[in-house]
Length: 90
Image (tube, rainbow, N blue to C red; front, side, top):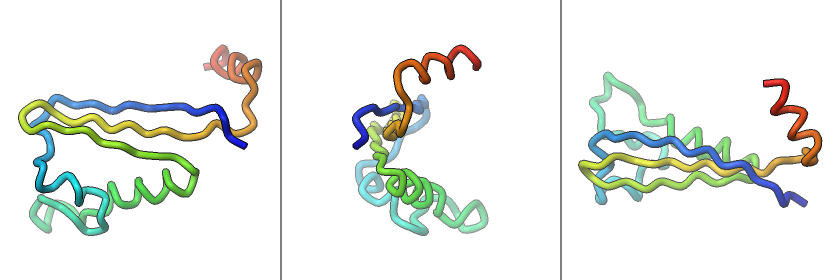
C-alpha cells in the first residue's frame, strides 16, 4: 500500500487557460495552437503516464494570471531512511 507521496508543482505567470478550454486540456489532440505547432498530445500523454503510476495531475488557471500544474505520485518502497540517503547523494 502506498502511503507516502511526492508532489511536484509547476507554475507560470503566463496568460492562463480560459475557463472554456480548461475542461478539455487532457483530451487527446486538443490544442489551441495552429496545427503546424503541435498535435495536442503532450498533456494527454502526461495524464496517462501519471495515472498509470497511480498518480494525479491537477491544474488551476486564471486568465491573465498564469497556470499551476500539480503532479502527485506515490513513493514505492522508499523508507524515510532511504529517502534521506537519496537526498544526501543529490
